[in-house]
Image (cartoon, rainbow, N blue to C red):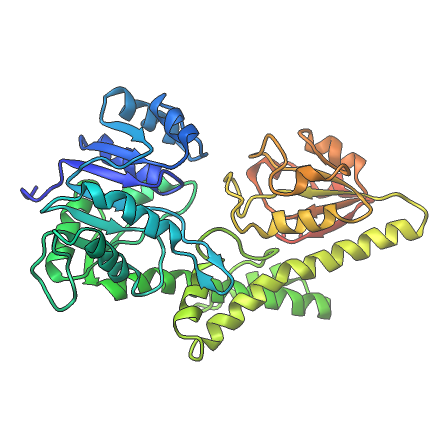
Length: 420
């Protein structure tokens, strides 16, 4: 291990990426301060508890706190390296970088000569350089890097996360990482940080290429999903089983079509392509269209639900609809940008009794709790017996024992191909 290895690290943002990163670093013997603006989150972590669902994260966090290698705080503390892992939501056609700016402002007072600052938050190209300029303005006594000047007091780099929810602790360690420093020396310093826990390859590049790499990876996925979603709509129109079609087409040695669904959710794939569109709006025609296809899929599902409700009401019934799953993907408790949640919230506004099953929520998330006609259910089999319409939105493992025969006599809208 090089002498440049940081001995103390401050991780700003203790969400789905920041907390696992802080815990993994602490498990390698590094002293870590995790920073979050939520006092509840800070108090919970300092008790050795976690506020998100991720396999093994609770046990590893408890150990890191017990050994004294991890503590949480609401303000940054002096450290050798700072890792910023805060949200970058997309609002009104642009990336909202206020959390990045606030994080940079929070660490500026404790920066010192020789420190390293790494941004991990998904960001449009140029964000890391703007952050360095912000730090330079806040700390004129410290020299920040620029692409034209290798000599600096504080090194700044970008290294995007590329992990899968449900496998975060494994993939943080095993996956390759792309490291883009503002200068070559910044990249080298950041590589020393990630060598503490990464067994995958550490790939150095320029800062803007690293920023664009994360956006490219998720946009590639988004385009593939858009093809599958558009294909599902076409097949529905033509009376073709899209899941059988995809299964057959994927027997071609050079074809690998993804699976359709009710849309695309999560903070990455549903958001990142827009950052490319923002950066190059005239040139990103395919990426924009894919986003529009995937953003439009929930409306298509809603139309099918409405037809089923109207048909049930036409024969004198008061329909009950059951939606299965609200998270953005199976077996996680993450509802960010979830098309399933968006669909359920729309149906809740209609004249229908809505039953909601979500194994990873004790209470109704989002706006669902505002509606008196919505009820969360724990016994999914009893809810199926009670419902007239069953809508599969998220194929959680908890639903794997629902047989097709259990749905006899029901109107079934299966957006995941579970029973197709």
